Length: 170
Image (tube, rainbow, N blue to C red; front, top):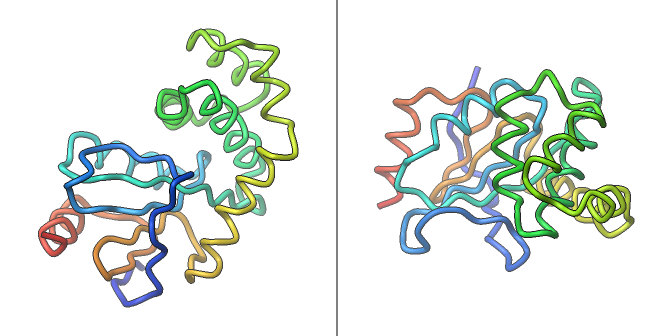
């Protein structure tokens, strides 16, 4: 069961992936590309007047392909296509194996050699690990977990809850 509560609010950083108007309330999300609740949250957030900050929280114990998917999104981000890869990974969570990741990279027009090299590189692995560790320090234990205003919400989010959180942030 999801609960709202106080938690340390991790501040957005320059290296974060941000989407939405800078002046809008900021929602920081820790998510896992293999988590169905994270995919549902991503769908719910589409079009909302929020500034989204995405951080990786791959839960390998229950989602064995989440780490590889996070690294693929980061590799796409190194070619300026993080959010496009993000959206495609959440749109088809049943296909996160390497051939499907390469196909997504190809359809995004990425340099495939660079994509493959980057997703396996130490700096990309470190980026995903840094996001995960920042989540652990902030009290994240499940996905999705979002921070908006001074509130933390962990687990499945209903549309009504998002509306309440968004209103509270204004």
